Image 1 (cartoon, rainbow, N blue to C red):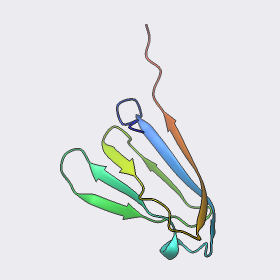
Image 2 (cartoon, rainbow, N blue to C red):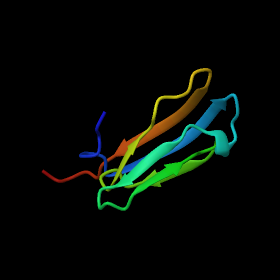
Image 3 (cartoon, one colour):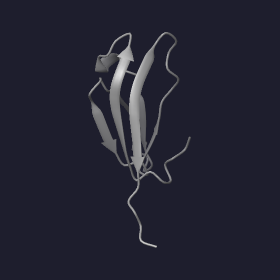
Length: 83
């Protein structure tokens, strides 16, 4: 799903993961700068959070490997605009 056009801000919260809940083995989230700044890989342990500008940074994940599970919350919001 491409939500980059409406997402001003986004927050990813790590909740749980198996087989390991350490950040180093977490399911990576990739962020890419619309300005051509490259790609960054972010791995969050349970309890970690990441706040980023959704319109400026495209975000995606590759499929989760077989035998693994991950629980996270990804919140998106945009500032209210007067009519």
